[in-house]
Image (cartoon, rainbow, N blue to C red):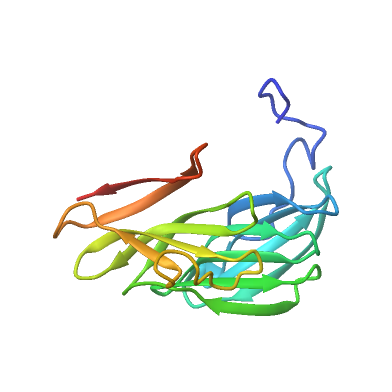
Length: 193
């Protein structure tokens, strides 16, 4: 889109880039000036990332096999790698891939019980937050922090990498949004039944 909110028809074909997967959920610009879009393919079984030029030309894409995976974010690093984060069948996962889509590492992330993430964000220091829910009888808001390379950050919370935020005993709570306040505190948005 242009600065005034109109569709930028000079991008891709009449303002749209060719889509090579079912559902796009995250977009970022890499250090070398490419657009990377992350999403789900094959009905939510695979994570996928596609690269485009800044003018909207499709460049390449690659799948990352996940079990019932739902991607929540794609985060480029200065070294050309990207970290993909999200859910996989009741667990939290991160995958680090190279510039050509080659697998480098994947991590099972800290969680409490049957967990899911709904949103993610990158902090100014490069670390990544995932917000969602963890289950300890009922669902509680959860926040997991990982390092820029996708590995668990066990210095977060009580050296577990994840914290639960129970708002009301016995009620299900889910985190749906996350932001960072000017004072560095984490702001969560969610709901409860």
